[in-house]
Length: 112
Image 1 (cartoon, one colour):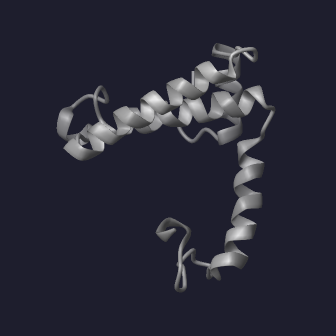
Image 2 (cartoon, rainbow, N blue to C red):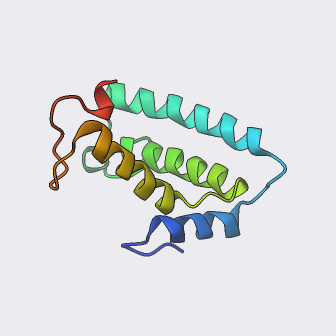
């Protein structure tokens, strides 16, 4: 069971222990796409955990589901998502001239 404050590495290990089918990468990809669609729906409806009283059918639930399938795909390809985040942010800092407090100057990766 995941505990408060878990790392991405711990999440990947937890998912790999619970759900690891390295012969089915497309299954995880299709599930990821399905969950992104569900996230789109709850975003449009702005369904939040605090408003609903349950995580079921909320943005929070669907964000976790998307994260779950991203981690599952990373596990299949033996990709360390924490390492990827660090490496990618090193590129972003240079590319988008980020300041130390993570504010973008000018163009941001989200405006692409």
